[in-house]
Amino acid sequence: MSIRKWLFFGLMLGLPLSASPQLAFVQHSSAATTAALIDLNTATADQLETLSGIGPAKAKAIIEGRPYKSLKDFESRNIVPASTVEKFKDQVTTAKAKPATTEAATTAAQPAGKVDLNTATADELETLPGIGPTKAKAIIEGRPYKSLKDFESRNIVAASAVEKFKGQLTVSKAKAAATETAAAETPAQTSTRIDLNTATVDELLALPGIGPAKANAIIEGRPYKSLNDFESRNVVAASTVEKFKDDVTVSKARAKPAVAETPEEKSPPEPVGKIDLNAATAEELEVLPGVGPVRAKAIVEGRPYASLAQFESKGIIPASVFDKFKSATEVSGSGKASSSQGTPGQVAAQKRIRMCGAKWRAAKAADKIPSGMTWPQYWSQCNTALKDRGY
Image (cartoon, rainbow, N blue to C red; front, side, top):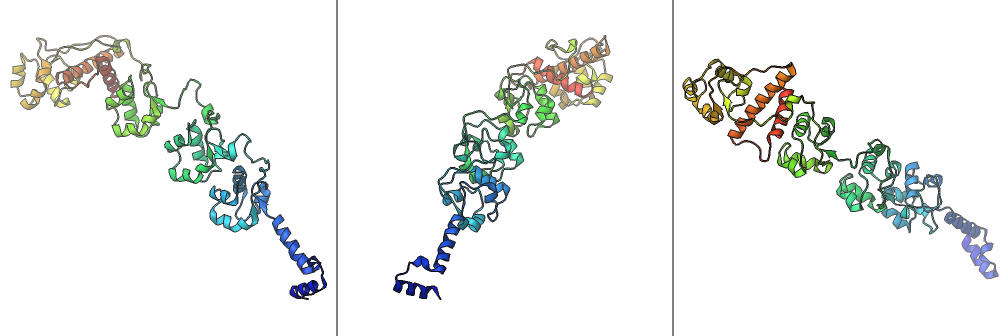
């Protein structure tokens, strides 16, 4: 007998509608369907994994994102792609009950199940869309963050990616939890910034745009009074400094010498006078503008000179070149270069002092000494450069 006929017959006889076996089946089936809905606020991970497109990682993310005010609230969080939610949205509900405690659930201290950028573990951070092990580590190393805005301004994660999960974040005032990376740092470190006055070559090489030559140049230019002082020296191009200026600091301590110095090398007196064409070594003469090894050798072989006029008349150096360094030179009565005595190390040090002194006097005569640079600073740079060249 059809349901329609049974209903008509039942109404005529005054029978209760529940007496219909077919209707009773329909009512039971409807009740069973309602009871079978999975509650996103209380379901276990195993129950959530029965939903289409939900695996262990997504189940864990759903649990960590609790509670949800409604299915619409759940969808707005983008914990699961909208296309996946469409597959199971008729199979779920969002009761107002508090989420059940599971091993994967976040601690009760976390507000509304949000991930705290200052305290979350790497595993917790990796539940955020687009965050893998590398980005999670970078977020931890950048702690602490003053606010979500502070985190965004650091550009640790692309702005487009942050937009996907910023509704799932919170930033506590507590300092970031200790990590294996932080623990590896020395207790004496007060920050992760690289000190331009004390960093080693290897530490400087970690800065963007800094290679071995620039690292050595930074070390040779020490000490720096401030970051502004460092920038004004033009040791590194301004465009390069912009890339790492937030990653460096300048302490008040004097920089450690890159190479141990002999007593003869420490603070030699400032050189005075002019370069003697009759006594200077070939290396000393090479610092003069326009004078290279060949012309320096020619000057030495043409000695002695009675005067600058006689030197000029010999035509060893073109007149146009001689005019560039004439004011920085002189001619003494001696035709021999000064000799040095002592250990090989002392002789080499004295030679570097003479060479750097010649450069200093020539640069000073041409008014080419950088503003604010003193002889000890110039000597430090020049001495190290000559050592690197094997002198």
